[in-house]
Image (cartoon, rainbow, N blue to C red; front, side):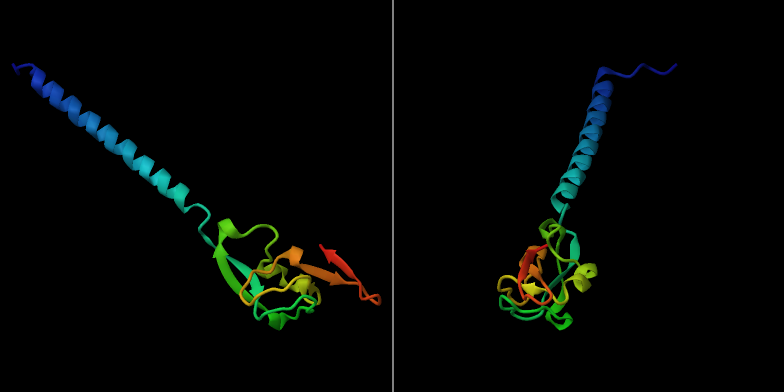
Length: 121
């Protein structure tokens, strides 16, 4: 007949089990922390000015170039590549520096005939 486990063996087994649980919880916590820290840093394509644009400049396709930014800095106001065609022919309402993202609020439509500014969309 086998002798029952001694108190020391039971305590050692419990200690090893507790350490394994603590290690597992720490590992999961580190992964969650990493995921939270990494959130929003994925690169997103945007449209940017290909050259310095003065206020009043009418946009052409040659004045727009693709760039990338971390997603946490891209708001709905920033133009994406799919929106470039919508702003060709609009004018810059403010000066825009080369490489700066194009914001919908910085662009305005030109009314036919009057030359007046309809303001940002």
